[in-house]
Image (cartoon, rainbow, N blue to C red; front, side, top):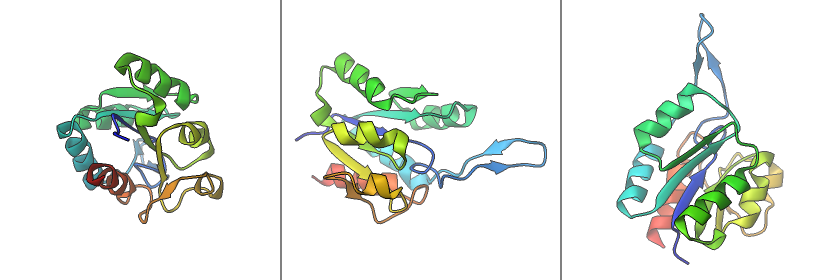
Length: 154
């Protein structure tokens, strides 16, 4: 199976699932540079990319812009619906989609795509999904890059 779309969750997958706040109330998220290089490698391989998050923050928009992500959905709880819409636009099947997520709002998407993964510190309900690839690294610590490397080497 050839993957044509790589999609990922943000909090707990691209980040460490923590929110950081400055003295003036500003919000921060910690992203991993190695994950970012993974997006570049996907782009060079012709694989489309998507970030889908239930959060709605300018931080994620800035990160998606920097990574040159093809599709971004913020404030999205029905992640599978968004993936299906992309598949329709690209004329591909769910079997040609790889998705990585860590929490219950990722469950439906993970159960329906062709290649699924989660960070090492994902919730037990996610780790127990049939056929899921559990990464050796945690969210925000390179799990996304680890999954990308797996896709590119197959």
